[in-house]
Image 1 (cartoon, rainbow, N blue to C red):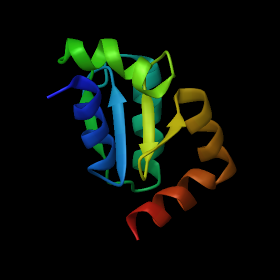
Image 2 (image 1 turned 45 degrees about the horizontal axis):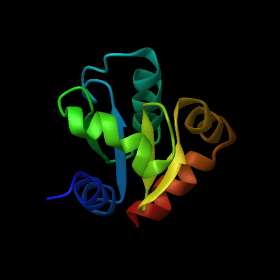
Image 3 (image 1 turned 60 degrees about the vertical axis):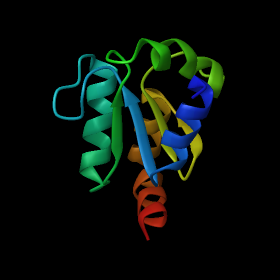
Length: 104
């Protein structure tokens, strides 16, 4: 399977998808850890993919999303952004609304 097709299937395969360095239980960078904390704070159920375990995803996800860094948060198949955007949405109360709508 083409790697971009694999990424598309992952992104569209769950309401909330997070690509991070490490796992949701053990993030391996501060940015990933902060996004996981924000999602947990709003009781989000999400699929997390460790980009460090899949070099093809690590290399091609920035091309798929036209977003150069990790973490990358997707809700309902749409790229929301990385750490800064996610934290801003969390602080404004918007992340919780987006999560509830996605999981409804």
